Image (cartoon, rainbow, N blue to C red; front, side):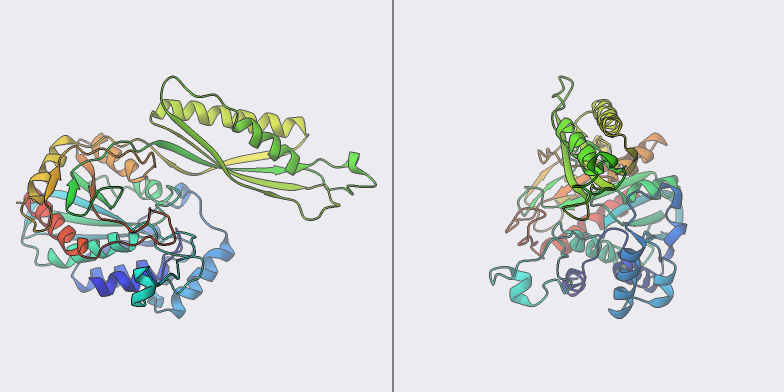
Length: 417
């Protein structure tokens, strides 16, 4: 497991470009006897959010092939369809239990400090500017470990192992839900390492994840010479800047805590040219789904009116999103109970809390299962971190890997007795 985790850590891939990672997952699942659904068979193309540019996808695809991705498997993922679902049926009929694991990395340059274990031990990222800084390499490894543990089929029912692309930016789950990958699931377990929970502690559920919408706005104006004929141009960057200032001036809400951020603003080509095009990436967040929707409505209104002020065309598209997570208490209690039987878990809590105020698109999967009468939870598995999530010195303690597999195996077999 450590070898696999370190291999994945050396080869981090951003959302929807996990061609090497996903092809390795497919190969291992087949080796363990699983039926495997992947590519467009596991994702609804019309529901994909925030797909990278074609040239980015192609460059990542070619790199994955150079670095050992199975060409036949990867070919079915070309274009960014990197979701994988492994299905294994037990010796008797019974319910369906699913486990979800995310696979993608982040656009962060990994530390070269000697105190950073991946640097010291020789498994630092080989791709400069990309790294696993949120434990998804560990999550994927645990999913494969669980697949092997359950491969004897000594259970009643069906196991589904869901390997999701593009969790960062809360993008990948939505298309898998719309493809129906969760529609037959009775019980869903999701999990994450770290999140300010110490090694040896587990929370069977979590709270505090925010509803969120990620928007891309594009402004289109008219280019002109900034010196000789500025009045003939329509400045797209000026319209975007107007929107930025007004978006950040939106009021707080009495209905719930909110967050808003313009994380990207770009446009223009030269100092003496009125910018013809501009682009913004915006996120809204709130503890309450309805408040987030109202915040998004106001952001869209500001963008439209800012474009109108400067006589610009504009378009807005959703490139990511999440909703709050409401965990099923029965599963939270079950997780805490089963953790008591795993060496290394010394503190078990059913109803944990997280104050990270982040967002997680596993929320769509959990809600879909619950809408159809099933149960779902999002567990936090403690891990002492040398640096925060999304930091150049982020790393995990590898002893958390086998104990996590043991916990998930017990949850699977308890659910599928």
